[in-house]
Image 1 (cartoon, one colour):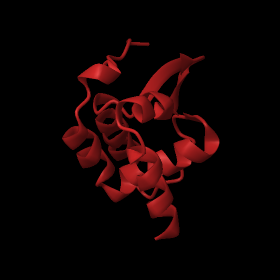
Image 2 (cartoon, helix red, strand yellow):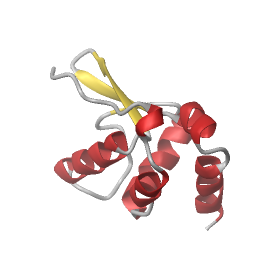
Image 3 (cartoon, helix red, strand yellow):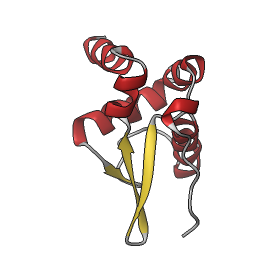
Image 4 (cartoon, helix red, strand yellow):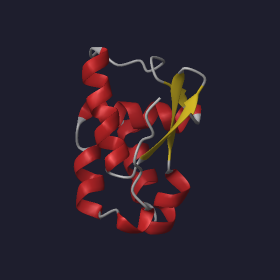
Length: 102
């Protein structure tokens, strides 16, 4: 399995984070990660094909929102919520809370 590049939290920028969260499918993925703590690829409940989901997961990873680690023959996706909270206090938690009440 090919190693994936994860940006350092210091190299993330707020416009990129917000842009990644602006898509409804990516926001739904982030909500599921926040609730579950981590999801194995293929375990997301989203109305898109696997190739489209892979694209959305890549955008989230490259924006610094998600960390991906190998787990057997699959990949586990986890939200980098504590790192993001340190970098942008309250942003991610506020967006997740607002999206749940919408």
